[in-house]
Length: 192
Image (cartoon, rainbow, N blue to C red; front, side):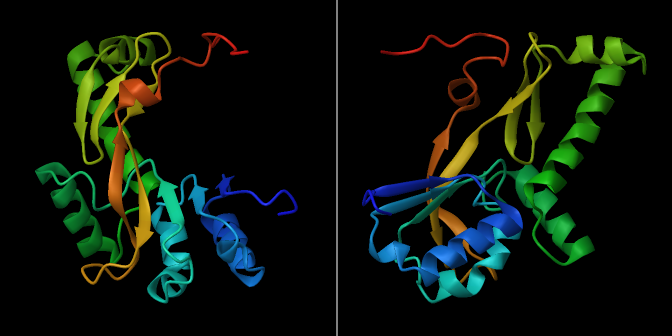
């Protein structure tokens, strides 16, 4: 804080993210900055952990976050059905790993059916370049590295009377092919 930053970009999530944000509150950081950007701060586990602080507006509208998946986006039949079934079974909102696990099982099923095989290499090849409909929205399987890429939602962490935990509001959605522009093995040109 000695440099008097306008913004803080933080990457700890889950329990570490909750503790970091609580420590920042104790130290008055939100009185000194314009915005705090918390990567993966839109994950259910982190949002559950800071519910009281968000409801009391302790972050002063300055906390923004991204997520791999949030239960209130996208507003599609696939997502609504998934969230409803998950809540009925488990009594809470699904986090990103629940959605990713669910979608992975169906991706493998679709790949195996297309390949007419359970052999790993054949399933992987069958999935190359495929677009899958998932609760999180479309996922694209890159041919180069078999990575599933997806849209990335980000927004302001807000209290909503419609949900028992905070949500991401004022959403900004980064399309998958824009967010994941370079496979990990492709060098990105450095700027001067």
